[in-house]
Amino acid sequence: MTAASTTDFLVVGGGIVGLTLALELKRRYGDCSVTLLEKEPACGLHASSRNSGVLHAGFYYTADTLKARLTLQGNRRLTAYCRERGLRLSRCGKLVVTTGPADLPGQRPTGRADAGAQSRPQGPSGQDTS
Image (cartoon, rainbow, N blue to C red):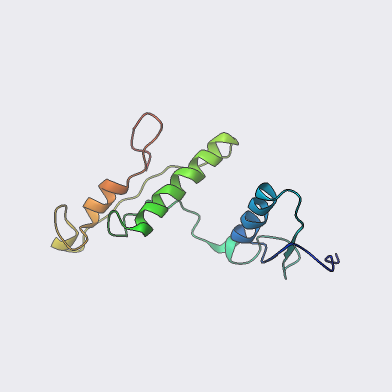
């Protein structure tokens, strides 16, 4: 396929980020032209196809940090996206094992158990969905 000689937006890479960006550009600026370049014969064949395949709960990050909040928000938004479209999502949970006293609830600096409790995704009725 040959790309247009001019475009309003050029997105390089047809992985999850590139495809999402191109879609959002078309949603926001419907009149614009968006060109997506991908070096592989199809989209999603590179790093996007080799991720861990999990929705992260955010408890590896210190509670109430931007990274923890964005991780939790992303988890909730992708869960909603899948449910709205009838896409299968396995909510199998995660077992977290302490490696020392610093990982126990109430300990600092991070206290993984505290962070996990604070970042645990909640379902529509408030139940734990992690």
